[in-house]
Every structure is written in structure tokens, then in C-alpha cells.
Image: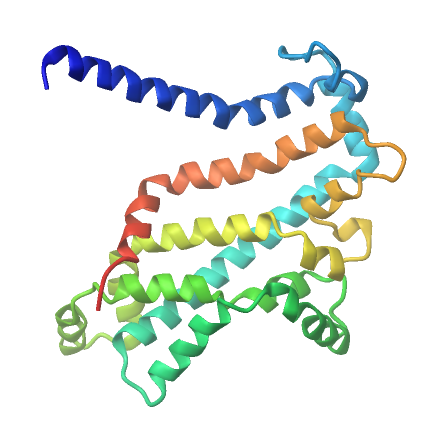
Length: 276
């Protein structure tokens, strides 16, 4: 292939990538612009492509409609607590399945994999009945506890921990380290990229969760952001300015969380491809 063909090929590739980027960011840009306009102007023709001066008004209206500060705190608290404990539980379970030998290990792991094929909607009624019996409706624990043991996160951690050499663990035991010290001081630092990938996945899934909080929470003070934003969609009137602003605010923590852990994300995902 001569030089001119190589240049043409690169121009074509970069051109397709540029078009893909435009299509990817266009919805986000429109959402940001919509948050700065009143509801009646968002779908006007020709469409508004530049920011307006209605952002402060939309923010004030959103605060009056939802009490956005409390709702934002609810979502952030639930997502962070859930992510921390679910990541820890997934790492412990993955370590046990990867490095310990015990009776029924393959059967238990097979059951975890099978649970990935069960639609989450199937478990809603049994879980709701459990929350009623525990008197946990409209509480933080009703949102956090049922999903702490994530089958996908356990699977990903197990696959990554299989790549950790057994010699490191044995050497730590010979040096007198206990099992918990080995896990926290030796294993977790080695699988840090996988932990980051799992944490991002769990944070996003909990932050964006709608169906289960919608069923479990019944007071405005306990609403999470997805539930609160869904309440803005009325039968007769929808304030799209408030909805755009609320959606914009709901994406900020996800972007920050991802940016903080992005350097570990790809290597953590690729680590799950380790074969036995």
C-alpha cells in the first residue's frame, strides 16, 4: 500500500470516528442546552442549539418540586454504601471460589452463574414480601441489602483472582500472615484494576436503579434521583426544562466516579478473560 492510500485510509477511519463521536455526544449536548431553556422552547423549530438564560429558574423550580438536595443525598449515600459493601463481598466471594477448595464449590459457582439468567423482575414480589415482613419499606436498607451479592461482580472477581499466583499466597502464609491479612494486604492490591471495574459497574447500576426503589420507597423524602425524576412526568404536563436539568445533575456523579477510576477500568475488564 503506497503512502497516498495509507493517508486516505487514515482520513476515512478518523472521519468515521469523528462522526461516531458527534452522534455519541449530541444527546448529552442537547440535554445540557435543554436544561438552560424553558420547557416550551426545548422542542421549538428551529431547535435551540445554544444555551439559554433559564438555568437558574429551572434549578429553582426543580428544588421546589423535588427538594433536589435531599434526593441527591439519598442517591449518593445509597450508591456509595452499596458499592463499597458489594465490592467487598464480591471480592471475598471471588477469592474463595478462585483460591480455596471446599465441598460443593463447583455447584455453588454454577448456581451463581445460573442466577445471571434469571430476570430481575421475577424476584420483585418475593423481595417485596420480605421487606414487608422485616418492616423495611421506605428505608435505606431495603434498597441496599437485597442486591449486595452481585453474581456478575462475583464472577468477574473470581476470574481476575485466578490470575494471582498461588505462590504469593503460600509465601505469605509461611511468613505467618493470617487469611484476612493476606486478603487485604496481598490479594486486593494485586487485583485493584478489577476492583475498580466492579466498583464502576456496581455504582452505575445502583445509581440508575428505578424499578426496585420505585416499589420500595413511598415518601418523597426517601426518593432517589431516578424515582424523583420519574415523578416529574405527569399525565397532562411535563416540564422538560426541569427534567433535562435533573437528568444532567444525575449524570455528574457517574462521570466523576468513572473519571476517578478510568485508568483501572479497561485492564480490570480484560482481566476477566483469564482462562482456567
